[in-house]
View 1: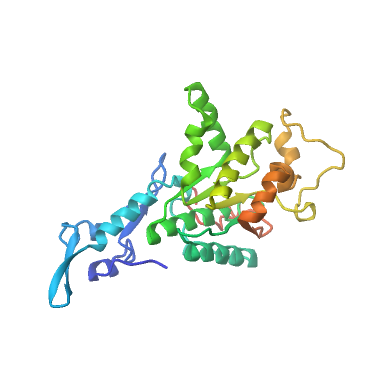
View 2 (view 1 turned 180 degrees about the horizontal axis):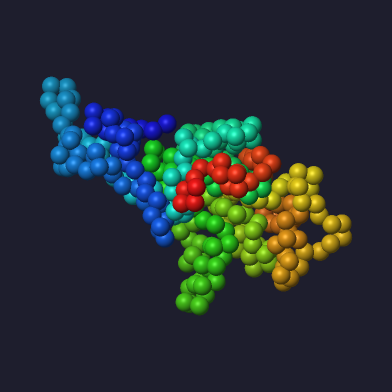
Length: 297
């Protein structure tokens, strides 16, 4: 899948494997990509940004591939990928189960087929925590940015809500926070349904999803909530109501379906916007240290 920078030094580079860039995992910061040391000074254009290529009986100046690389690195650095999953990629994703193999295939297929000039149906990964859903969201955004130059953003929905609330104290409207997410070609929303489910929270989610839906923009999702009650290992107690103001609300909410968590209107939109993919190997891979690693593994 990589689109290598074609020269002998990059091809032999142990750090970048010929890609020309490396992604750094920096404590307390979002993921950052940079030119690999083997590309610190471009051997093709000698940092002029242009190379001479033959055309007909003469030569013409052409933008060097190192400039395209710099542009793609800049696109990647705007995504906002958490440091803990900075190095997540399709290549580092391990298919421990049939669910993993199918989820990776769907994510890669989306990335390869994505088009800027036509609506591209996204995907929604669902299953218990620790299965690799965030890894695939990040791998998709990474590949699109660094291999195709496609802009994207990653947000964890509860943290987005916290940012909106903090903005109110600074006299900023919710649209000041949401506006950059409304037009980005690909948006990945992680931890869908994790919020308390208040009317205000649902209205924020509804506005974000509806605007992207109406604009035909691709949106990717990951959630720990199942589609059907019989899929969920946590069983809902008949007749029990989840109280969002209760300290036990999160434990009670675990038994709910995704439709119950986000509401019928939003769930209907999700069905049109996304391919639903179950990613639930039956246990938390983080606990048995079989995940993708990072700061903690």
